[in-house]
Length: 244
Image 1 (cartoon, rainbow, N blue to C red):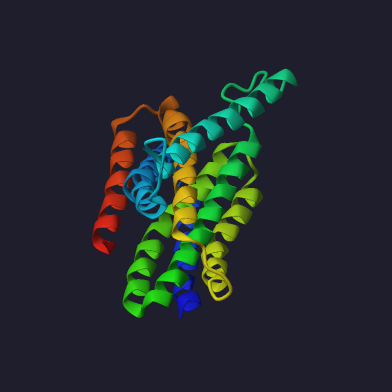
Image 2: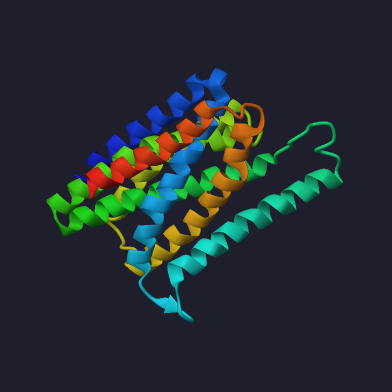
């Protein structure tokens, strides 16, 4: 049952990526919406769930929050290291706001891992009961549209070829199905899952605040771009509210 339901997440992820591909003539709006979706997912979905699941504190601070900050710093460190390496080899010369493709692939890879955890969450919820499984599945399917949209956008934004972006999109779509299937063989403890969500949330916040949104307003600082960002956050809020 869990694997069958996860197929809905597979289709929604592909739908999100397809949408991102079809609106290339409104790139600033796409990036504005993607940034809003990412902020919404982090602040309204990932971080609250991480705090609930991780539970324990480390020197007075919830472990999920420590890993959230660590994820943000890790993303910053990786990008600065790759950018410095590119500059040292003259890769950024004459290219303006050059971006290392490896950062886009790493970020998309993290989203694939998150989608796999979504599948694990579906499978684990169905082990508790059909009602719980259905509620979790609806939440995952609803926000996997945003995951597919963001996976394709992030991979493309950092200069990767379209075929790579499509490959990462397909991997992201397959991940929930494989994650759900894996629950037939093992179980991930809630504290470990919570810590992972905290770390991933920090990475995602860095990409949204330091990369996606500045790029969205770089050439088109329009009010419509800002409205798309607000709409993205509002959509995730609606999804969280309905599924909760």
